[in-house]
Image (cartoon, rainbow, N blue to C red; front, side, top):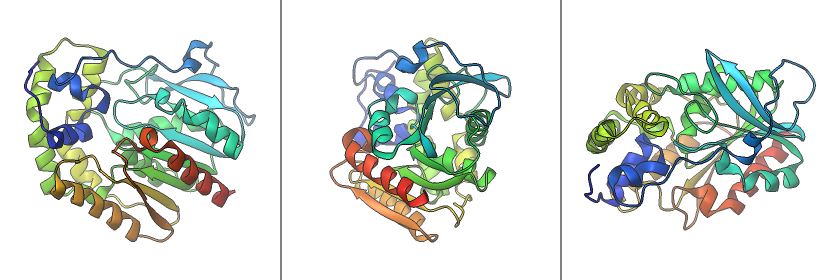
Length: 309
């Protein structure tokens, strides 16, 4: 791997293509870290996945979709169900500190999960596809009997999954909280091409590294990035689903004022593009808003949950 340091802007650009947790290791800027362990719930026996109208049991549920197994974790509660989806490279353990607080504050059932290739979920060959990721989420929720009144909260890359999930499942999501999430307005042809060019050297270094589950997931995320995001740029959030968008103060592009402004402009354009959309600024926060400002994230999810009850 290269030992050359990269700028904060290059690091931010890479963050939108590669999972955040291993960017430093790929760039050689910090000590390498092992992939995160699966969350504590994964240590319990998996509950067999059976379609039922009864509330799903607490803990880990392994659910099959399109030939691979996915790990879903349930914290029991009432409706609406809160579904938490982490950003690129992060598994369900990302939400471990927030889940008990949300459970106490809202009384809602809470579901977290590991996208394919992350945490306890199995890998899927080929480029990462947000539509396929949305299909995985759909399969898990249906198997758990969650077919309506969902509050969907997604961070960063999970914004793409949220868009495709909401469009493919009308009537399931009652409201959403997008947390410094990727929105279509940001991925113009110019911006997408720039991200691909900026991250290409790091991806080439990654391909030379030993093949591990984490590395394979990184490469899958980067593969086909251009066409995937050119298509995503044309997607529109449905007007019937209210959304709170939390934009970070520093954005993923702290250190590049031009690109940071483009991120803010995209957030503003997204919230102005339809009714029932609210823009919230996470003052002083990096792109990692759920870790920097957990009280704010808790407040906004709690507010959306109260609104749709």
